[in-house]
Length: 143
Image (cartoon, rainbow, N blue to C red; front, side, top):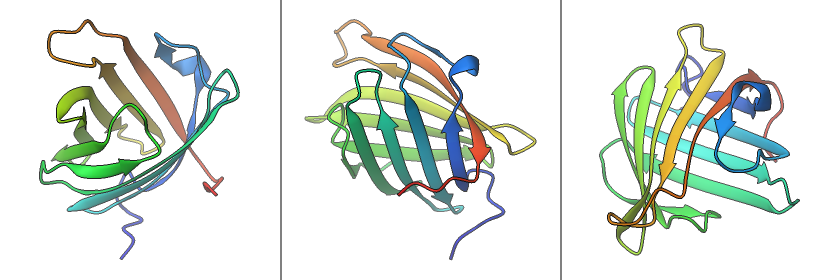
């Protein structure tokens, strides 16, 4: 059952003007999210500044368990927790080691999604990227 009233459910388009990333801004970044109180499905299509495309797919429950990720070389699994109705935390792992931490928030008006993330390939490794990616609710569906 699709929960259209869930604030995370919808198609989200990256807003380069509102975002601050340590890495080059992508040409396009679209996330299609379907969320319920118990689980999340994310379809993410990214075209990076160098033209390379990524198609990320995730299905996970909000139980803190690692679930497989496809299309994201940075991580092999993600574990999510629903902090409240407008906030989700995620931890991504590669070879069992935390490589990505993120917090995703939907604004009170339901039209802006903010992803705050840190990429660190190991506990004693330096942070290699961090950013605040802002998305606006759109009508274009991910293909």
